[in-house]
Image 1 (cartoon, rainbow, N blue to C red):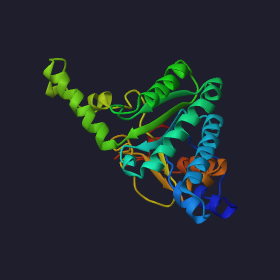
Image 2 (tube, rainbow, N blue to C red):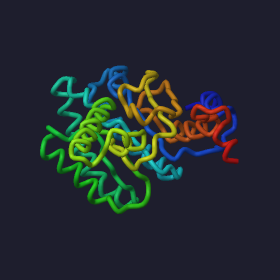
Image 3 (cartoon, helix red, strand yellow):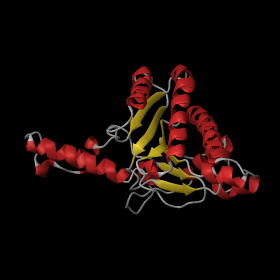
Amino acid sequence: MNDVMLDKMTGGDKTAITRPEHVAIIMDGNGRWATQRGLPRSVGHKAGVEALRRTIRAACESGVGYLTVFGFSSENWKRPDEEVSQLMSLLRRFIRRDLAELHRQNVRIKVVGGRDGLEPNILALLSEAEELTGQNSGLNFVVAFNYGGRDEIARAAARMARAVAAGELTPGEVNEDVVAGFLDTAGIPDPDLVIRTSGEQRLSNFLTWQCAYSEMLFLDVYWPDFSDSHFQAALEAYGRRDRRFGGLEPVSAVQG
């Protein structure tokens, strides 16, 4: 990222005012990054894993509490079988190679998304990552895997319906907090900032419920090129936004 781009995002002031507690990222553009270079899409996905490693380190160093990434959507199964297989292989290698290091860094891993129908070896890896790091107290690294926002809400509604049928919940008790408690992300604060790379400007079914009041930042950079400077500039750009949550005054002004 050059100085002109950085100044445009931060308003020319490199000092952050407010840091987000929760940053969510749609890691987009691996395939196009590779295509531009005349390389197979699989090379782009491998480069994307390196970008993820850089971003986790940057999040740890910046003091962000939660980092959520869109690892694999429930719609990605529609991609060619060969590409899906390559993505699953990358997931296996990432967990086997990086899990011990993330554990040493005190990172706590949480996986959200549907698990029905996943291969047993994938389920075992996801469970291993969560169980090994479950007591850690550093960065909360949330991986949205086999995840779709609408699917999550539908599964939550089904769980609430079963609770009502069992007499554990009445329709009159259902409110936003109750619904949030039935989501995959129960106990996780909503994202303050959502970053999407590649220049696309949509959520693509990512954290549909949770992003109601998130700040959005769309970057014209493919995910494999996402760097520490991009991450820091995004945090600084967030710090200069006024979050009103439907009110008339910025939250910072009300609190301060």
